[in-house]
Amino acid sequence: MQLILFGPPGVGKGTQAQIISKELNIPHISTGDILREAFAEKTELGLKAQEIMQRGELVPDNIMIGIIKNVLVSPKCSGGSILDGYPRTVNQAESLLNLFDELKIKDFRLINIHANETDVIKRITNRRTCSNCNSVFNYDNIKNETKCPKCGAVNSFFQRKDDKEEVIKKRLEVYNNTTLPVLRFFEKYNVTLNVDGSGAIDDVTKEILEGLKVK
Image (tube, rainbow, N blue to C red; front, top):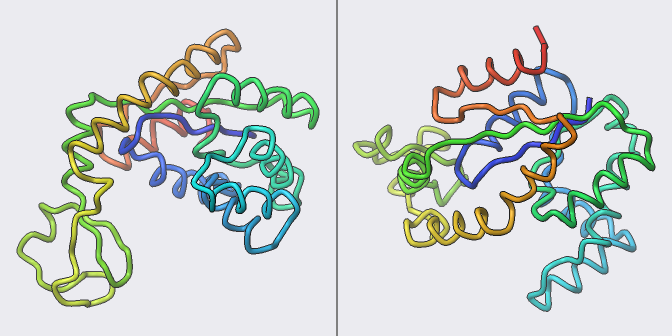
């Protein structure tokens, strides 16, 4: 089964991707991760993407879809995968479906995790990151702690710039204007599973697995 994970920033896609990956025994394919792998392996497309990103430009869709294709045809994805972070535009969605046709991938679902924007902003601005191990915590859980529960570093918690309210609002604006139309694009294919991401992590996972009819 090929899954596409979709939703606004801060809705919990990364967390659910890791859990569902273990539950279904299929790899979590993050676009950020596969770009870094392509850089490290010095593939032709990886080197092109790296050169473009070093100029501060976005990787073109034709290069990105080529990198995704290389991953989807690899042995680790023979049983399916969870694609996270792509597509972000309608053009990318069209390219992805063309790739699915080329690879004869017919069993695919789009998991749309949604939540109230106010809840999303609150959730993200409440994040704190350990500067030593990069683990992320809810501020309410560590506000009285001086040591990181993961690595033991002292006074290491900080708020990333990406987690500040003004940045989050801008990211949500970009999502609503550029990425949300992708959801409407997929509606005509009847492959969308809508999931409420505002609940507890286990409840969201349960809703996803039940929606996919996985026991």
